[in-house]
Length: 60
Image (tube, rainbow, N blue to C red; front, side):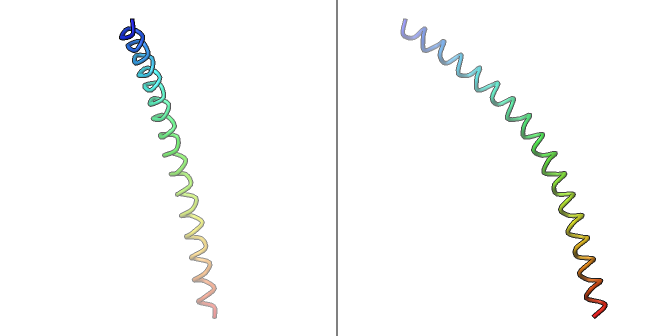
């Protein structure tokens, strides 16, 4: 009886962890896309400020 209940408990736990792993994978894909978008925005802003800075430096 004891081994049977622990077996059921183990099976349930593995099922939960499997579904959790699937949601983790999905969210990590979304996070990758978000971070890629943020990186593009940051680099565009950075290049803009660098150009602005250098154009001001040349005028002096």
